Image (cartoon, rainbow, N blue to C red; front, side, top):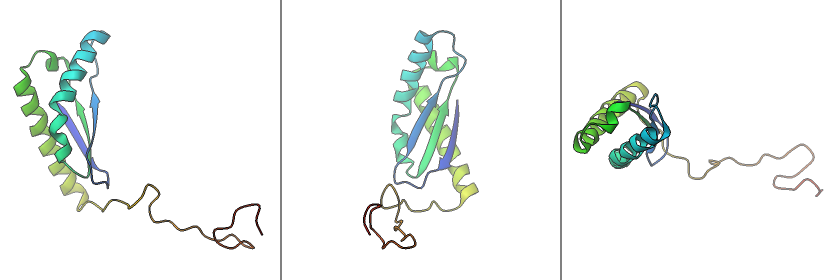
Length: 116
């Protein structure tokens, strides 16, 4: 079980899953479903992107143990990311941030291309 974390500057946590090296789609999808359910509680780590990666052991370990391993690894990864990056910057207020349109030479701010 491995979890990597990086600050994302948002007010939510985003979680990605990786199940490399499993032979066959059936086993890989079953491991991914178990891992997704085990990682469901990771949204409490606001402001971080988390990537949870596991191997074939996700198919055989009892689910309660899998969930505990995911949470323990996530807490450690977020702690390391927090220490390495310092405080997490606040999320932008909109998708494009607070950018303002600048006027092009000869055109007032906010004017469209076909307008004087």
